[in-house]
Image (cartoon, rainbow, N blue to C red; front, side, top):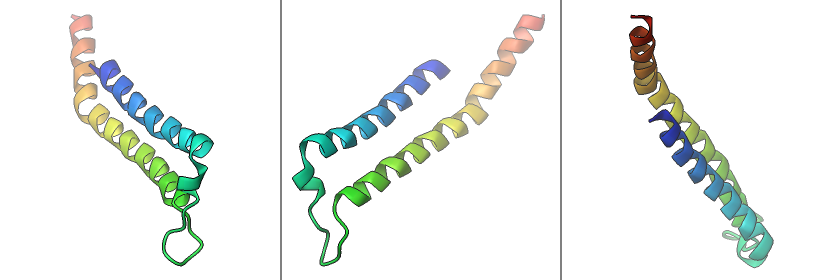
Length: 82
């Protein structure tokens, strides 16, 4: 159960990261569009979003690991000691 959940979150993270890298490689005009009248381009908030997304999915995994997966591990250990 833990491995399956970890793989899904890893896949989500890789899709976000490699999707951004593919945009950098193949669609530079999209990322270089300015937002408003300042100097910030669309690529900057998208890059920050990838980092924030990674932090969020890490937090989701840690939260689930501490609540659900630790309890399952304790059951396995107790069952093995009997």
